[in-house]
Image 1 (spheres, rainbow, N blue to C red):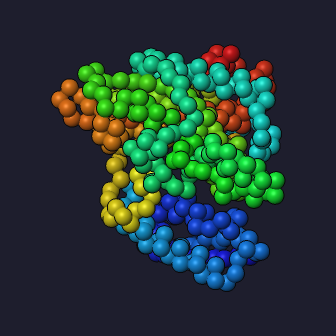
Image 2: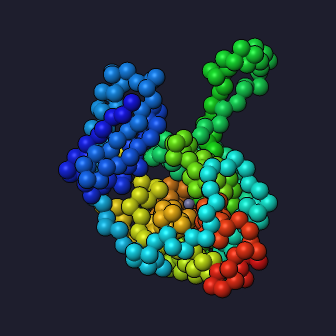
Image 3: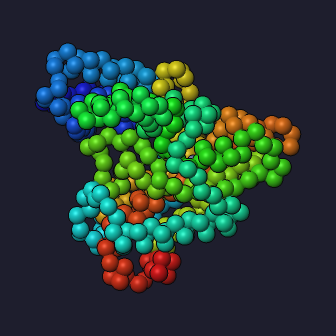
Length: 379
Ligand SMILES: [Zn+2]
């Protein structure tokens, strides 16, 4: 079953944001195409599940989403770096392999991931970061401070358990045997980490830092992705490294910018094509824009490194964020003057870097071209 949603005239400059949000309107949506000339989004819906009542509910939710976006002022995208030649897209790809969704990584994948991460660690250490390892779960206390679950409920995975209680254990076992145990799980507020940096803030919570602090950590991160949008670039579980920088305003912004320069050098040395641009969707802002009213997104809050794949698709593989004093105030991390410090993070989607390399250079390291590609870096 297909349903067309008309894009209101007021939102024609926000089609991108709208397209990002529409798949979350209903679990019955199985696909989406945007017809630019008609200003219409076509949805493919699950026939079995959709009654006419549900279609009108979906339309209602869509109206709601549209009116909540009307008040957002989208900042004009600003490209700060690019090695793309206009009109010359999709000419550098040597790999014609099908990069469909894979449920496992082979030795080549693992090797590329390890070597890429070494390069990210080098950049982190160069800027003075200390290395860390953290658990994969964020505690309820941490969630209360970072509020990620309030801003992005659609992304989270909660962790449930069977209570350590004789009756509850037996009851669960009985229910499991007839496959009806869903409600016997208990949730105590733990969330699978969607990113690494909240652990860093938790570690420094309540501290007074005289000289600022830089930390770096890597881990598996989890986001509940729309099923039909998943591919090797967009996965529900992925490996991310973050570099977190905390300090006074100027050094924090300066560090963010320097890391961005270093990452761009690495990106080009690996033979990748793409650009760094301002992002309109800083991860720490609420998507429920209605509660916030009209606001202007900070123009320098987030930069994104977008790689262009051999098929011409753009994929974000790193972001460089500046949060002002927002997260440090939530975690009460202060400077010598008792004022909340400023902070930010650089985040690398290591799986995505790996996929981008395979897309451009193929699945055999020996076949990579020697010239102008970062073989020296990765070998
Ligand atoms: Zn972060």
